[in-house]
Image (cartoon, rainbow, N blue to C red; front, top):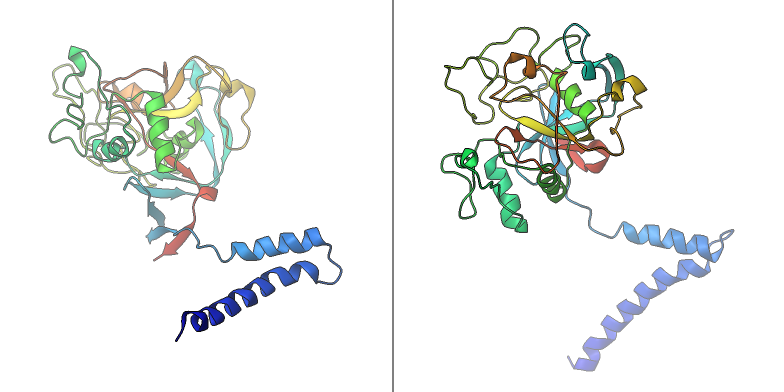
Amino acid sequence: MSQKTRFFPIATIIMILVFFIVQPLFTGKGKNFKERFTNLLESLKTLAPARKPDTVVVKGNLKRMVEKDGIEMVFIPASKFIMGSPKDQGDEDETPQHEVDIDAYYIDVHEVTNKAYKKFVDGTGHRVPFVDAEWAAPYNWRNGTYPEGKADYPVVLISWDDAKAYADYTGERLPTEAEWEHAARGGLVSKSHPWGEGIDENVVNYHVSDISKEDLRPVKSYPPNAFGLYDMAGNVWEWCSDWYNANVYLKGLPRSPQGPEKGDYRVYRGGSWINPAKFQRCGERGKNLPETQSYVIGFRCVKSVQDTNTDIRP
């Protein structure tokens, strides 16, 4: 077959395709050119490959998915909950207790680990966790990686901006203060801790006494709450997206509150391994400067439901 002969059927096919694409622009009763052009664009969108859906696995009554960083996330349904602490239990900035309406979201089952954070560092060239101080030496990264044997430990020495950069990279975000407390409570009402009432060293990594041996522990070292979430108390504090305001609970909060528009400090939640029992409560609020890097502050991520493209599988 000659080159000219091979060209003929190809040209014919192209002309036919062009005809069927362009023809609708000049036909279509009762529609002007603009409407027909808009309809054509919508039709062409269907030809583009769809983004591969996130795989959502249903385990019992919990829906879970795994995102870019390899950390499993749990689906938290939209609901109302009582935020804050009773006056006789919490600090003044935890009062008054108030009802908050939260949209559905996904949240990491545990804190972001060194192993997961290294994927981010390797993929972006972002600075490694490091503070030039003696107290930070056991937690500092060297030669581009985390301390030996600490892959499954929470990443620390992370500023708020570091945490946000990680969340942006993975297509997630930091939780709002309301989302964090909602998740920590695990559906329990009027309970102090993620597991209910009372506290001991079998359920949380916290400061028991001055003579006890305490330090960071690997994620998932303690039982999860009713939502299947680990370390919502103890181990490390967790950065939230909100600016801190001591009086924000007095102002009345809208649906899925995002926190104040500005401030000097960012909120963190959950208590840590160096803090005593009081700081392990669901309602406890912490704050620090966004640039702070500490061996007791880490984070976990959330994802809005509308940002997912889910394929639910049993």
